[in-house]
Image 1 (cartoon, protein in one colour):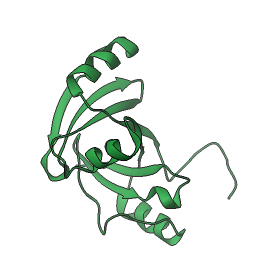
Image 2 (cartoon, protein in one colour):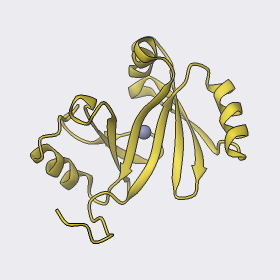
Image 3 (cartoon, helix red, strand yellow):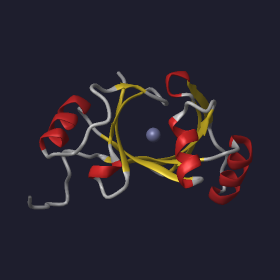
Image 4 (cartoon, protein in one colour):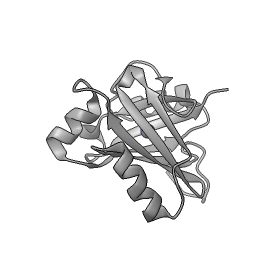
Amino acid sequence: MTFDGKNDFMLKIEHIGIAVKDLEASNKLFGQLLGSPHYKVESVASENVDTSFFQIGASKIELLHATNAESAIAKFIDKKGEGIHHIAFAVEDIEKEVERLKNEGFQAISDKPKPGADNKLVFFFHPKSTNGVLIELCQEMK
Ligand code: ZN
C-alpha cells in the first residue's frame, strides 16, 4: 500500500477511551489536565458503562466507568488497572471498513456494528490481532 497523505479508510482518531474507577474524580482530573471541562456524560446501558467526553481539537477523550461487575470495563480494570482501554477511529462507512479489516485478518469481537455512546455506530477488533490495542471503529449515526 502506498501512502499519498490521504487516508480513505480511517478519517481520524475520533477518541481515546480511558478506563477509570471513579468517574467524578477523573472528570475533575482530566478537566484540570486538559484545561477544559468534560462536555457531556452519557450512560450506555447495553455496555454497563457511564462515559464522559472531553473535546481536544478534532479528537476526544472518552472516560469509561463500569456501572456493575459485568461490565467489560470492570473486568479490564481488575486485570490491568486504570488506563487506556481503546483507540477509536472515525470511518465514513462502518460496514465497509469492518469487512475490509475482517478480510485483512483482524479478529472481530462482535457480528455487526451497534449503537454506542455519542450517537455513533461502533464496532471493535480484538487486541490479540492488533498488538494489544483494542480498536474501535465508529461512524456518526445519521
Ligand atoms: Zn469508544
